[in-house]
Length: 376
Image (cartoon, rainbow, N blue to C red; front, side, top):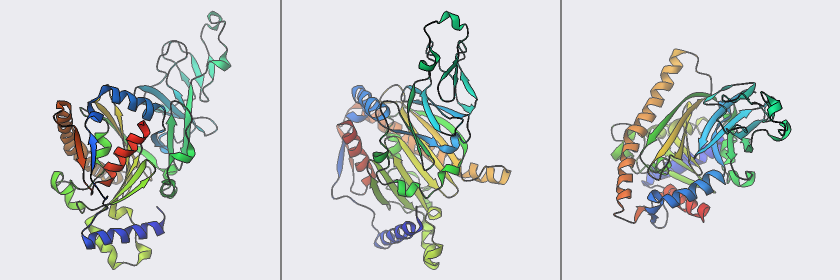
């Protein structure tokens, strides 16, 4: 965020603190429970959101050098993204054109991709390079049987893919690029990733980050005392959004000149990158929480990745990051997600037809309305 924008946001937060207010909408909003339990609705979400829309996969630091690659299952579609020898980010279906085997797993560095089944080999630009016993495939033309390439965009250090169709760059950010252009994420380094599976609808993961109303209750013994509860600044950017939660120590900035004000150390900046990614900017690192459907409306897979501005090379830095990351994961996976699984059990029982978002939960209302619009 530009420094002038940071100063404006801090003044905005001070006003909320002084007046004991938060960003509010004119009315409450009701969201259908059917959106969390219906298999047909999930099928529509997978088709419209995860296949026909852009999906944010990670920072450029996941594949920093030519030959770097990473794999991801995007709502059941195996995706391979890499950096070719010219430094361009590319994405393909992670499927061999011979018998459909997965080419590679995980992440790493490669000069070429060789199928583990029959050793068909592909270049980083997706072209078919070698076919063992090629005389037995006389109709194969190497230039026309390369990997199935999918749309891939890399901007401001973020990598997006779209399985069906082409990414609309103009609609991608909704104005949020002003923030992301200032962060320098292109030089961040991948530090740590883990996978969490839970018995809850995939949307309950991003939704748990979308309000600070629960901080003083659910998190009273963990992160609750760090932040002002039920006090946040909300902003919408197309289908994307930003939530700014002030730490209690932000009040110390009033003793300093505005030229010294820095927003990030005194807040948690929470971006929802539609439809499934929560991007949390903390002092010293960023967290990505990517939620995917995992076989049913009551199952999800959450991919958590952490990136740091500098490589973590010494034990002091490692201890610092591990302590902060462990707090975040233990809070979300240890407190939020078990509660969300309980919510899912109630939803599956179908004893009520909707949930209600208060005027003080604008991010949830915006997300629900954005999902409805994208699926309309």
